[in-house]
Image 1 (cartoon, rainbow over the protein chains, first blue to last red):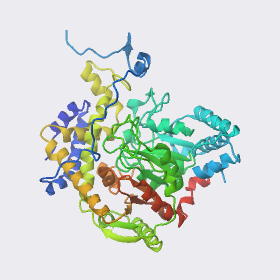
Image 2 (cartoon, chains in turn red, cyan):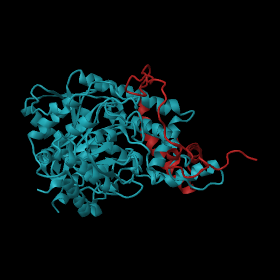
Image 3 (cartoon, chains in turn cyan, blue):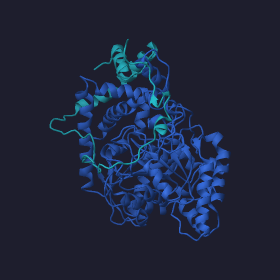
Image 4 (spheres, rainbow over the protein chains, first blue to last red):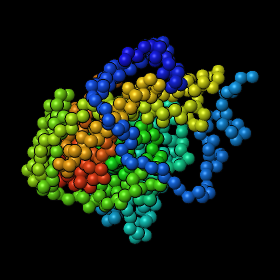
Length: 96
Length: 486
């Protein structure tokens, strides 16, 4: 599968990354090279093979539903790029 | 000999005999850093004031006649993707350049319980993505054996700090070889524990199903001591293994008689530098002479592990790094609306390698390609793991090179794919969640060569014993980087 410049543009949008035209071209070349290398996987018959997302047999871990101290509002906001009146501040999301 | 050249265990003995104080030791390490940091660039953030306070507290304990832990008063560095309360944790990324965590990682809590002295936060590839520390968002770290060469990565600052005497031990993190490969390039011991053996709580996530914290040290004894300090179940990490933790120093036994060693033939083929292959073969001969049984084994899906990793790890990274949006923490760029703000923030904050992996992972997970790439890679992961299961039915440990070459020159591997191939010997171990240790086993053209010993799940004690026996029969671990002689 060949990645086109338009594919890269679409993936950049999904990734929330802004790219210059030169970067789009460059990433197209690099991603194609990496995915071409990954094509070797298709030579392998994996019919009937279960996928391994995780090596441990994971299960939900529960803890008692007890009240515990949490971060103070000041501490939670301490790393915020912008805060106002005790809230994280972001550019407006809705029109109007 | 200068204090900064000693091991953890030697310094512990000196502290309890009052031959040196913890404050003197910390100051000796800082003086060493003053001398070499301009050439090496190991640290992003130093924590000298805090370290001196920690050292003074240990001296007070000793003065009161209290027993101290093995790591008490011994200076060590932390990779800068391990969260430290009140101390910047940047992941070597501009996007987290000013991030100060409000909490400590579990390993940091455990080190504090041991009264360890923390010298600072070590440079690394941005978000642990890379094999050279050239991808740091701030500066390149250099190899103390040859400052024109990389220290390896991504835990390059952790490794260089120990090799150059700027720390006595260090913690790194290993997603595809990021502890073992820099340990190999810097002539040190580096251990990636079994996945889940050490808590990942407070380790900034890159690829969650692969990441694991572990020690980088001067010798195998120190490795066992640091692993003792950080291993164990943690309720804060849902992937933490709830199993008893042995005392790993009990595995420091100079005996490999009857140990069954497997040599996977796929790890000695094309791409392995002949000097590296020779050093490993000589090391294996040494094991045979010590009474181990060596046989060739096959891990037939080895060639598929690297491409599978470079789909799985970026896929997980693209998900984990979605949180860097300029809202809750980290860098924010101005934007005309929120989507524009996200895009500008992430484009300014992330470096090329991080963007490349986010793009690759997003593509592999996107509609229409998920089955062909991500799901396929997960199935291949199953086959890679099955290979190891079958090999470990026959042998106790596997031995391979840690990296296909010795440390390469800064700027030498500009092609991303060529760089990815440097991880070819370490990545399969992460896919299978196994423990692996790298230790020096020779030199090629004046540069250290690393040997990797791989064990069954939770068999850290076995690989430590094998590594210790080899170390006792050689003196590679006693040699210092040329910079150590300046």
